Length: 507
Image (cartoon, rainbow, N blue to C red; front, side, top):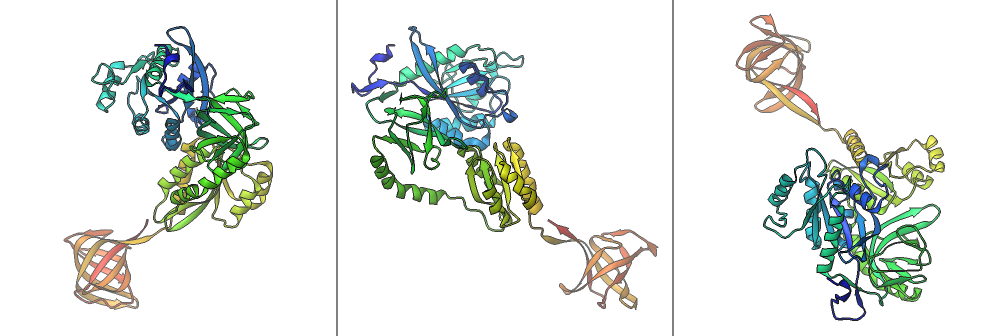
């Protein structure tokens, strides 16, 4: 197929553009290893917990069947369930998805979650059955498991292409790249390079020296140095524009991943961006968009449940991580106790964060893939704020679970363990009385607390100080048995009363 002749709308300014591909799948099924093999740089080693936790984007070249070099842009999205927002965002930015499934482990819950994201995004996809070099690999079982879950592969009743691969040694990877180009040719992705660039914000972060930067994918048009980019209400000049290798560039066009630095405010990750020739045009566009954006933010604002509140300040490396943590917090909150995010931001934990926390000693400060700056560390020697920093989301979540359980309001409840129906009363001394009766349910235990009930009304409390059965001291007396009891109480017990033995349970 001669892709240079594809013309989607018979518009001479439209050209075939490279596909943007998102790689998705279970956390342990080899996404990062596959991407690592493709771009020949080791991103797997050094990742905390073996989990890729920030989206990255890069371009590769692959020769098609005709021997021509073709570009493919790859997006790497995190595999952990907590990062589903980021993963869905990656699918939104992509033209084609690769669903990676291990031939050892087959289909997992995260596999299906990734699959659902792909289906919701309505983009074509290819299944990569990975780890075929492993001794326990079972390609046929994996294929059948996929079909059982509704993923109908080619040759098995469907038209979903699949490629068996080993991301570790490279087996099948070239065939996978060929398949990506084939799907791209069939879909005929095009763009108009004469237009001002538009696209999607993939990631955003703040660096101490460089300020706010964002990774963007251009989906259409051309971006040139000196233009103004607007994402939501965030604005930046393209004077500092880099390609995926970190090299300064003057121009970029569709399907290119770029880094823009110098935003005046933090752009919303997942927002589309537009570009303009002048700042005035950009500001006019922002004014038009402001009301819609503010309404959207109001609808999606985090609202904590009622009950006891644990104030929390969150600092993360990137915006996407912050959203993931907010989702995890939402799972922990309940009517009794909940976390309330009073501040969140990107960057190191600083003195301002600790001073805010100090206003309420219940406040905790959590950092993810970030650190305390020197000033904050020194200040906390005095303030003693509860500050924790994590680089693995599982550990952060576990810590939050423990803390919310420790601070959960305790409720005392009374559980009745047995009832003694009083048949006869005997002598009494000061604050003590001897009675006889029958255990009508449960059991009566020596030393236990009792409620004294008369005609279903509680008239007082007491404590069993001695228990006898057949005139022999007993530790407990069970249901349907008679016994004698000495009760410590100020209430005068009468025949017909019921002693309800109970325990206080703290829940």
